[in-house]
Amino acid sequence: MTDVVDDAKHAEVPLTLEGAPPPKTLGVLDQGALWANLGVSLLGFSGALLLLEPIKGLRLSVPAALVAAVVGSLIGSAMVGLSAIPGTQTGRPAMVLLRGLFGARVSYLPTVLNIVQMLGWGAFELWVIATAAQAVFGAVPYWLLVVAAGVLTTGLTIFPLGAVRLLRRYVTIGVIVSLVWFAVAFLREAPPQSGGSWTAFAPAVDYVIALSVSWVPMAADFARHSRSSAAAFTGVVGGYTIAQVACLGLGIYAVAMGEGFAPFIAAPLGTLFFSILILRETDQSFANNYSTTMSLQNLMPRIDRRILSATIGVVTVGIALLVDVNSYGAFLGVIGAVFVPMFAVLAIDYFVLGGARNWDTSEEAPTRWSMLIPWALGFVAYWVTTSTPTVEAWDAIWQPMRDAIRQPWMNGALGAALVASLVTLAIGLPRRGLRR
Image (cartoon, rainbow, N blue to C red; front, side, top):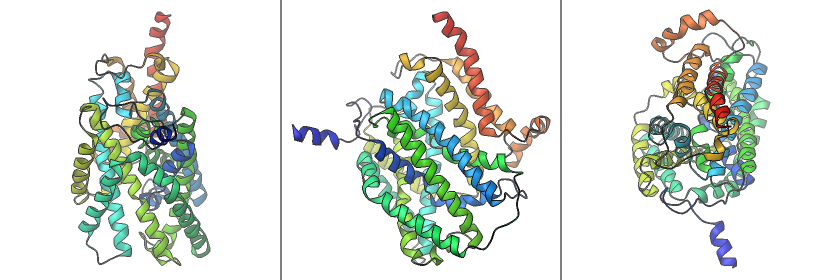
């Protein structure tokens, strides 16, 4: 009997979507450790520049930036946490859940979009790992570091639940010690920071929400292995919020001390503790690789996930060798515009309109064209209400409507979620009343 329990405890993810039900092995500590590690990112440290100055020429004060980090992280992680719950309850990964929202065939559209964004995120992560490693080991070629990080990432993806347990048992402790060490060092050495204002507070919150919401399309991929919905939600909101706020806050003071990763290397024992953070960064690329695999399995449910993971690893490495890192801010804007309203539609339909009672994730799930309407209108609302710049020609299309609205309190994420939610309710409530 003991052997059976032990085997179940250490069970891995089924190789295909048509295989055995996903094992429910992750408790709140596993989920919390996973999301805390995902909330700490070397991209987040450098991303503090966009937090401090989300619009060129409008710099936030340090208190305003810290409050924006807290508010944006709480809103964004709550969205991620809620999107994780259906995965726990149904045992289905994120893109397969969208069969219940849009129908099996139409779910392929957001699945393809998610694959594109996950490949982009994966490439960015390999780029930042290699760039950070070069700051420590300057003589090692960039391409070799990218390939090494890609191989390690792919290896973790072959045993995803084992990787999550590894994070909880060993990596999280090293990350906490490293962050505390750098926080003490920076608070002692950073010059006083003054100036700035609260003028660009809403765009800064928008940026932080986009950082968080980029994980919405993968939350259910891990939550489906959670022992309970409460464990999944608590792990996401608690772990991710605390870690991301700490990461952005640390980045604000690092920016004041120098460019890039130089302040981390220059700190006492900085090379040691920064190396720990570099090694930990592979969990970001691992999560992206695994979720890309899950997305592909929505399209090809009978293909062995190990084959898909290896293929994705090779493609991501190739992209990382060519990626344009200057498109990072615009990339986050596109992610928010696509997935914030989609999350809102899913949340209203699943939790408010009673969709959870008969959520159809089969390959024969009927098409629900009406659910594309609130998603599309939410997408439009994002660009009308956001003030975060992306691509100049694209922003010019929306600028007249933005000027007509002229409101200081709304941002793209909230505008998109509000419009998508209200339209979903307007479509769904009459039908719900007829069913009764």
